[in-house]
Length: 257
Ligand code: PEP
Image (cartoon, rainbow, N blue to C red; front, side, top):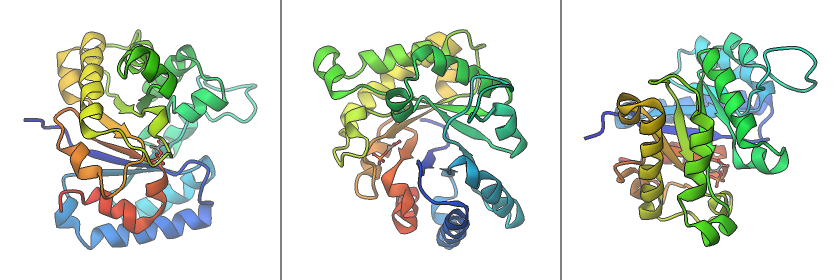
């Protein structure tokens, strides 16, 4: 039986400015707080745009909310002449617990290679921020290589050189399932997540493999979350579109109900 605390993570992408973020977090806290006893053993995290992080941090601290938060990306560099980038130190200064790294939109639109992803993972880990490492195959990869080959190779590359026992979260996000309304089946997700756990075991050791949360992402909603969560190797979800609607996101968090 898994002792891993499920993690439901909301990736806002480029949505909600800082005023909208404050309203959203207040409403989310109110909605979830109302039913705390129903979701107390699920960790909830939001991933706002960088410009919202300070507001979100202040609100969570002021109201003592049980809500984690993180960045949607991080620079591989520490500081200097990297216009437009945000360092792991800057995120840490805002008490950021997590950072999403290697999302397929970053890989696709910003040409992030496995090497860049690995460097970003090291930068985050070096500052004590837990990376949520995203991996997943395109429909083309799926046809040519099956479901597991590409995500397994991406994860191996991302974990390369990390010390045994490093605290990471993995998100399996088939690219064809993101924003398409076409989620993977729970069985498909389980199969790949189990293969990814083997990679964590090889790279970070047995204890880390037992402790690491592996999330599924791709068109998760309140109507399909419970099926994913029943799978032994799926420990939560990375939610895009459905994380922007408070009631829908709260319903996903309360999947046990
Ligand atoms: C995502 O982009 O991480 C994601 C899973 O998006 P969606 O839930 O909208 O498919």
